[in-house]
Image 1 (spheres, rainbow, N blue to C red):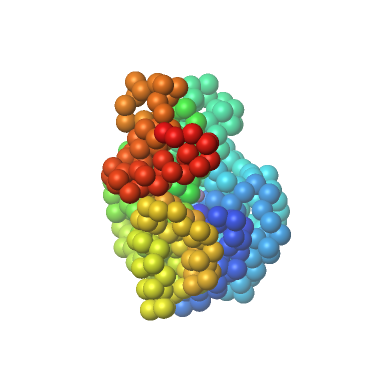
Image 2 (image 1 turned 45 degrees about the vertical axis):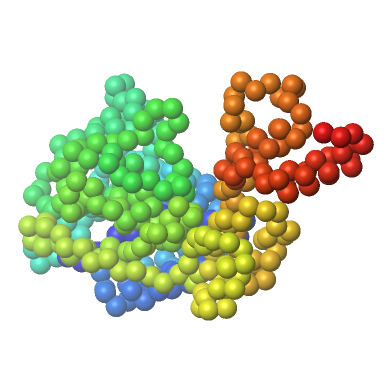
Length: 380
Ligand SMILES: [Mn+2]
């Protein structure tokens, strides 16, 4: 059996103030082409379909368009679960009606954990979609007072599934969780504040494939068949080095899986440029991808007038500038120094030394003293 595993589409996401819906549509049209070519028997989308509980209309239209093509036109059964960014109720709308059409939407956790049954030449494959839910919700739904963490919630759900599985069938779990050992990115919203949101990979041992969502870097955890497909696109500059992909999974009669990762090409990549302003501007003419989303780390130490304006003349999508040499936390090198007893010149010299890691030259020192005495009318 061949199926596609993807997750974390985050439709409607803003990236440093820019709406990404057109970029997402660009990638998803390639996704639809991939589905046409590879003809999977199912598509699994493991949560964070939308970026927020109330997505913008453009995002809802985009999802409607994509699902109409893959479920309506191509007739490929598609399983969707809610992630921590989705609204369980809103995503769940119409789910009972849609099931008949082959679109299995699991916005809310349903404690019966009935599988979606697929079939190939070797027999049945049970797909268990588990919508994301907070531990107190799982505690109430499963009527198990001992559930007080994501790990216990996940364990209880998995045990319930495995216990109730009667027929001999291959098993796929679709879930949205932070599995211990996984590598994080900046665009994931933590599942738990203060407590641990981690779940233990060992609890997945009874499944032939686990289609995970939540972490945005494509990665496998503990086994070849417990995988994060990763997000549809790069959603933070911390993901600039990620290679985003879609998993096409082949499962044999024994439940063994072979995964092919397919990359989709974004309309604009997310990159980080690092260097001096003059160098970055002069190298831009040889840069074929000037409309990429950029973060620029400037190494210059002096004052620069309107750095972002200058950069945007050549790179229109500079989203963020960092100037690490000007980002001191303001602490003086000598913590015991009493600011009130230090004159302006020494305070400035100390500050300059801290942010540039160099001492003022005599010339700079004279210029600073001259400027202060001009302003204050007294000599330093
Ligand atoms: Mn996500």
